[in-house]
Image 1: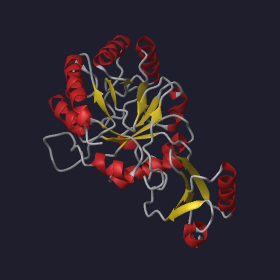
Image 2: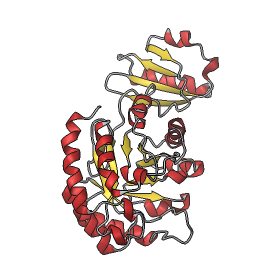
Image 3: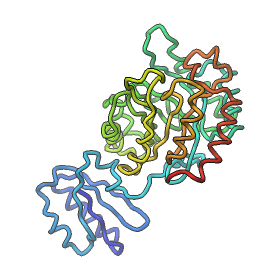
Image 4: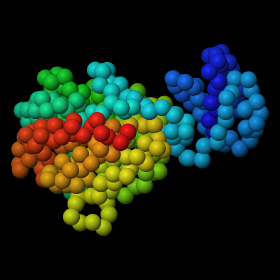
Length: 335
């Protein structure tokens, strides 16, 4: 249930109302917008009389939310969430950002070279895998803690904030200086990890699972939000279908659907969704036109010899050309 407060309701009145609801065993989530303050009441609200609450002097309206993802729902939080990093980079609410870098950190020279190249082309965040979830236990698993240290060197060299994927809750201390923690598709429903990330006050980039619905993605985001971490970015990265000409099938319809259902930023990964560098450009442009809040793209200085996901990685030169086209399309995006 959500309660929309009147504009003239003061803080003391809202606090008293919240305390009354908490005394009955409900959790309260407060959303202060430009025009309205909204209280989200979490719990079994069947015992609450809507008409009694609606009759209160400070209440403008009361609505029951049918969506199970109450904190992620746009009904609870009508305005777009805008995530602001300490460096000033904003994501969501009309702020479009491009995250770029190699699938895996391989060496100091490699990550710094790629970081400089993507920054020069217009990327505003650097991605790089230190821990790599691989289907085969014999594949390269990433440099792990050393990879984190090398990402910090690239950040120091270029000033780009860093995005990297976490594999396990025990790794959280190592991610202290990572700007955005990525939860990969395979961990989207690792609920114990999501609960731990909900205790942080750091942006979480949550990727959709290979075979998960949009509601399941939003319910995973709900785990993080329910823990108190309000900074979640949703990522469409392709789902597994019967099609074999691509690595996955990019669900572009997820962009407007998620924007309609949720206030959270939505970005798109055209690299993992297609699996081939030649398909990254058209899918990135389509995602931009469809209203995505950003892109996350794999870029490698030597894709043919990459230790991970070389076939889907763009060269720095190809990425630079793509950025020109993305920037040309952005003014016409459907947002």
